[in-house]
Image 1 (cartoon, helix red, strand yellow):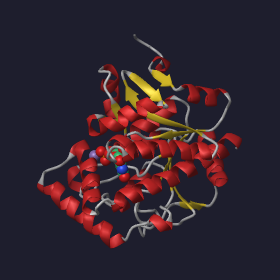
Image 2 (cartoon, protein in one colour):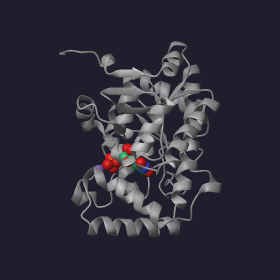
Image 3 (tube, protein in one colour):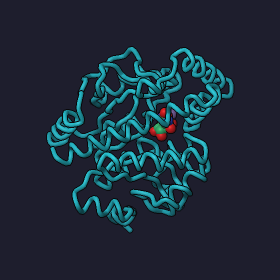
Image 4 (cartoon, protein in one colour):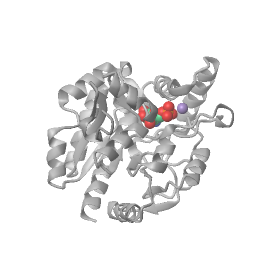
Length: 309
Ligand code: PSU
Ligand code: MN
């Protein structure tokens, strides 16, 4: 199998293939968020609602995952159901996990990093998710920095997200992205959003107020051969934003529990996110769904603008 082309592993859904053939805009969607981030059946409802939101804005959605040895670019409804029902039994798959997930023919839910890789392989340039991974608090000691950040440094995909959760060290996350040359653009805002809250108190590098302006800047980046992705930071709609004190309290407690239990490695982020949901009695889940939908819509508009740019 030496020198085997990537294509033999890619499995494009018929709708995705058709959209590509017609030059229609495509938006990639993440599967870790569905499998690990939300309980069944809310996760399936959300996955379907995300795809519908992308279509409403005139683009074709492709939820990405790894199934039965294939890199799946777009899932049929029965496949989405399988992923949603598997939940945490699906393997959280980041860059380093991809080879084994393919070879073992397992069920892999792709993180931001892995979703970017699959999207790029399939020629999809715009990707919507909830929040990216980043530099964890205490990373000076633990070295825990998400592989999402290095992926953003090297893979040509724009990631539309609501910033990163304040379980992370947002200031250090921005420093790391700056070092790696990853642009962080605020959509209609000068501040980095903090996921459930609209503002983090930290600035982005530029504010862009339209999908066309974002598309023009993306086109320039890639036309110039400046490798890597971009963070498009889209604040949660005001009516769904949560009270900062509630969120900070839940995060504070989740961090203490994680430390006590010696959590680390790839289990840490899912643990923190689940505890925050439990501690806020599901308020963060509702906010999470609202912000991902908002990101899917913006991503579809950017993909459309990029197709016309
Ligand atoms: N942030 C969220 N929800 C998530 C994740 C991050 O608000 O579900 C997931 C994403 O899949 C992200 C991953 O890529 O966690 C980062 O994990 P780690 O910190 O282990 O790299
Ligand atoms: Mn980590």
